[in-house]
Length: 51
Image (tube, rainbow, N blue to C red):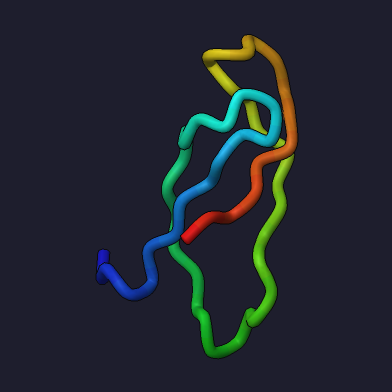
């Protein structure tokens, strides 16, 4: 994976970085928000894209 396409997802409740993914930043300009499982919170919560 190229570093310029790599993004991190942070849990909105516990503020831990749980997931990494990639996206095309030329096509998708806004930040992604996905509902994913957080292993520290032990529940599904919203995860926002961070820098």
